[in-house]
Amino acid sequence: MNQLSLSFESNVDLFDANTLRIPAKAEQYIAITEAKQLEAIANHLKDLPKPLILGGGSNLVLSDRLPMPVLHLKNKGFEQLSDAPSGTSRVRIAAGEVWHDTVSKCVALGLSGLENLALIPGSVGAAPIQNIGAYGVEVREILHSVEVYDLQNEQWLHLPVESLELGYRRSRFQSEDWNGRMVVWSVTLELSRSFTPRLSYPALGAVFANKPPKKAQEVMQAVMNIRKSKLPDVAVEPNAGSFFKNPVLPSELVAALRQQFPDLVSFPVDDHQEKIAAGWLIEQAGLKGAWNQNKTVGCSASQALVLINHGGSAQDVLDWALEVKRKVHQTFGVELAIEPVCIKG
Image (cartoon, rainbow, N blue to C red; front, side, top):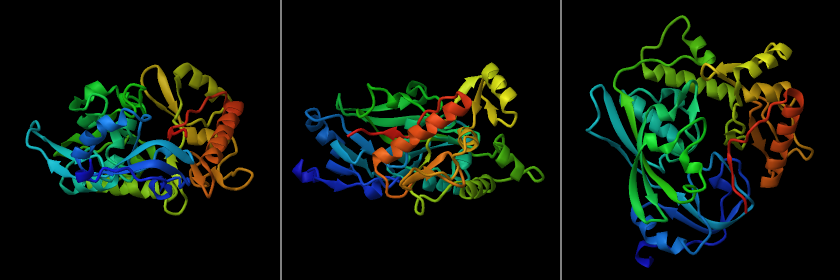
């Protein structure tokens, strides 16, 4: 372990490693940049609590103190592969790469499929774990496979997308069996070399209502403009992106709610279910721009779905999230689910 510089650091400040800027500290921390590091520490980890695999820190609520080992994925790499079917191109990207940088690079190479997912914060490795999605597209639609290291069995695995059990903001990586065990090392995407715009999301479709886009770059720029207009900048207002999942409810229940609330915003999921806009529910419950009593945590004034943290602790963030859930349930009878992963100390 010594020749690979694998000693854990103690009492490491993770304030800048999580986008909520929670003042968390890791009792044991190591930055992972080489595959050999994972192989070398796997046996050592078996005597310790299940580790936290940290990426960009954009979808996490960290506790103020983290007693478990923290493995911070910082590996880099981008490679175009040669075994893709006609009309497509496969790219393999290291888990530690920044997601938006990957989107920009692929679009610049003339590859289509990622443009609707521009400006989503976080790392590439988090994409399959959360099955990230935005503006009518989910990553599972262009995900081919992932390379993972199984810390428990000490082996490398190549897993096809079909084995990941991807659903709305979920995957098998979140299961008790895989969480903290399967480390996503790289992601392989299958992208198109021709461009077909995906404009089902109303705000995006409106941009191109009179002049359809000819290039993926146009859609990517439109998505970036929309996100910047609606979502607060994490560098200015620390946040974890969308803090609540959009509730998916039976269509008949949505219809009943619309009888009471005619302006209810929803989107069809299939023939039997609809997805309600959680941001609309929070805003209508009177919480857009509202803050907790000590003014440390609140709902963004530009997008109620985003919780802002100005000096609050993990408990402050979670207490406010519970208040939002309570008020929405009181108003609409709908239960919100928290999207970020909450790490308990």
